[in-house]
Amino acid sequence: MILADNKQVDAMMKILIVEDNQPMRRIIRRMVNGVADEVIECSDGTQAFALYAEQLPDWVLMDVEMAEVDGISATRRIRADFPDANILIVTNYDDAGLREAANEAGASGFILKDNLFALHSFLQGH
Picture 1 (cartoon, helix red, strand yellow):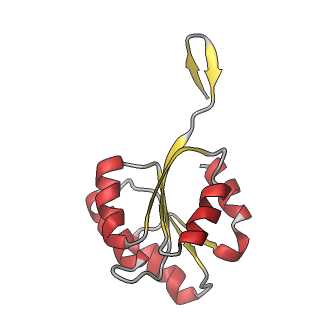
Picture 2 (tube, rainbow, N blue to C red):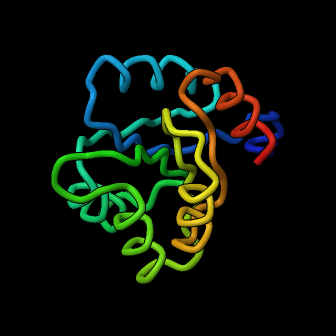
């Protein structure tokens, strides 16, 4: 909570959604409703890096499988230039090797798309 002019105001956050599937981006946007006061979207890892550098969001919700630059590579690139970046992998794939690769790239967490309700809870806790 932030106090502004003696009023209590909830601190909201800026979120960048990186997802190549537009319907899934809409679903994720709905899931962060109430947690984020600003949501930015893009469909590729290359765009994600440029938008991150320009917007400096509080969280990046990163898909893994995308056409141009995958989410693991994009995570690695963002964290290389912005070590404090918070990146949450949001994927369909529950694979130990993928979790390890995401962790090594610097991801802060990992949520499966079939349990997006966990997304809202995760962000509220951070």
